[in-house]
Length: 302
Length: 201
Image: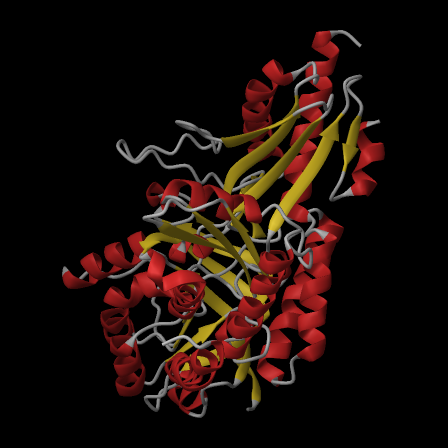
């Protein structure tokens, strides 16, 4: 395949990736919602979870956005040092965002902070957002798109704790954030926590945690245990779906960390709504595409 | 907890019987307004002018739909609630001046709205946020649209709906707020059970 053909193919594949994220909830999220429906016994909470699950099905069948807030388009690219098309990706991801806004359609959600102008295509200064990771020894690129809703951003926050507050202080900071958020971020939520030497690294790790599937624990046993404790504590708060009262306030808690500075202990919390929309694809050096979160899509771009 | 199917126009009696936690399905006319729409509506009313549609006994919905135009007809692609707390500053006056009977939104509202609900006979209900495709199937027709100059999400959309729901009553007309109670219980659990167990002070 020549470069022009590859470019065309990757553009179409990325538009489809964004569409998949908007209309098909990843299997791990849907399964977690189903589990929540099974364990709740408050009839009001159950009727809401039922409506949410019905909605997921209707959206999938009719290829409609799951939520009217189709969010901010955020890409994460894990690119190998031997992947041949890295330079094409920024422009492809931007053009795919414009195209997907028309085709899905997505709600135009990017408002220029200083002019108040909405270009109507979900682009703008630095938009769509792209985070990069560099993978040594790999010849593929893994592209993930998150459609991050506005309501669940209401409580995203970071703070420099005093080191003496320790991990208990981190836990308290997260629990208070979830308490204050209450029903606003559309629970059951996904809570992602970053810990590090400053708020920048902590926040970066927190956002990266949203890429991790629900139910997958951190590879470091101490962190995995911390995640489980935090998840249990958050669910004991008792908000339940949309704050109707119930046992499942969070579908999962993801924690990641970098070493702290002797003088600092920074923590960041971000929340995703129950409609935790993400889609990933792997691009091979021959231009072949494999959809990872939505495998049935692979044949559509073969 | 009871379940009701209500039709617009809603009577005062229809909404006075509702308690927090009740589930409601609405059939009839709902009108969408977000922040900008509330502001404009109150400006018009303050000048003694009429709104494009009389909201008396109708349902006000905090929502901004995704729509498309097919020939000269608007269709709702998906629609769902937006966070209502932003409209708290306007809602007392909206209820007082229009006589609307029900507000639909998400995320909860505050004491001024609760006061208006009690005084004038109205309720605040929530629809599960994010269930936008399901809800679009409950919208039968776009009856009309006004104030498109505010942009599509912020315009006033007049919608004919059938069994719109499940809606849960969060503020009833008796002065109770379901979320206040849920928050109070949550605080108590955090302070007396969760923190002591985790050794957090």
